[in-house]
Length: 144
Image (cartoon, rainbow, N blue to C red; front, top):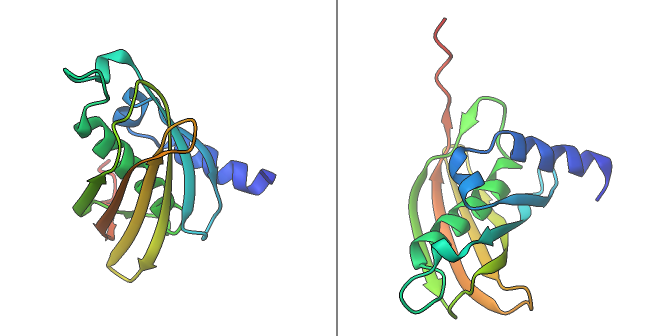
């Protein structure tokens, strides 16, 4: 990855919320203005359900995170993108371990963005797909 792209990926990583750390997210690639991201997650055994596969809520959070990283590449300084709506299609059960995620901004308008994402296992098998609609807002100035 070119150094400029690594700086973008590191910047996204540096601004990560605690929930991204819980998911074991690492930003592998992100290029400014590209609307694309590649991330990976570490799903521990504590994320598994009664059947031994990763519980769907964790996969939903991973997809939201992957799509959010893609959206971060096209945000301007001072913008924040709360998720308005998200749809997920679970394709195959995910197993504990490394899960790869990708996001792609389909359209970024003045106040709304549409994003697509995918999750895959280590062998490249598609686990889940998702779409997201996000509101583009200005962050409130810090008080003090």
